[in-house]
Image 1 (cartoon, rainbow, N blue to C red):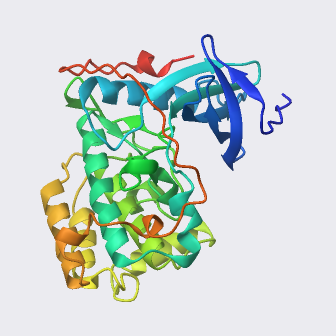
Image 2: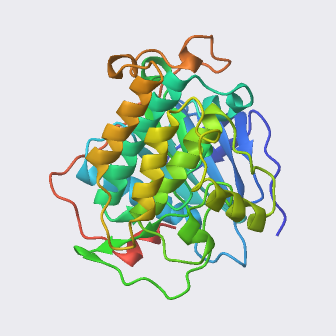
Image 3: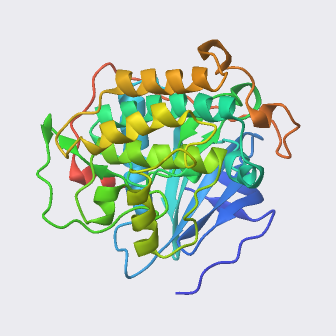
Length: 331
């Protein structure tokens, strides 16, 4: 199936709205992402997923279901608003409120200050707690899973890219894990159980978050290496993590790794404890809790991206509707 080649100025239309492509944010073998504007001049993010015979159910379906569920259940500031979606002959797409999605990835080469890393960590943990509370596991936590807002929201961290998420708890009951689950996630950031084909649960997202923080601060030593080498090095840091967690308070971060390693599929994450250890780690690195909401590294220099903001009118409900497998079939 031939894939359409998009260029600046192209228009992608849903049943109700025309979206003009302003620039491409990222691209992969599965799809691409653009900053777009509607006829009213409002700016949004548009995500494209290519149709494939190997993936009869689009990953964007799960992402749309989660975004809808979140907005029906919470007023969380850590998630974008779902705006629109549609399908075309060769691709699916969804539209959401715009974020400055390039900032964290663009700055990884020069790394981030400990204060910014811990500030992101606390917001990311809040976002994960909210996702887990609704019964989902992200399964692909990495730097690209987080991005700041734009304009006045440049200090707010959003959890994005939820196409690999799964339902962990349904109707109040934790789903029985499969004996051998397919591997989901990015090897450099996957948890130890995920490498072993163990069904993922909230504890796996938190372990992946710790690797994400190290990547932001120091860079992971196993990036680009084969999966068996990555697995061996992850096991090695369980013995000596001083250099691995440099700038991030090795004693406190090691305590978090040891805590997470004790959790199994059914054990709930103690989010207050994880938060406490992150705050203690920040203090040990001369980052008092009161400074963790100060301007982040990307806010201290002019952004190469525009500061326009999108608007939406998301409806809110006091009650969370039951999760249904059919909810992921959005197209």
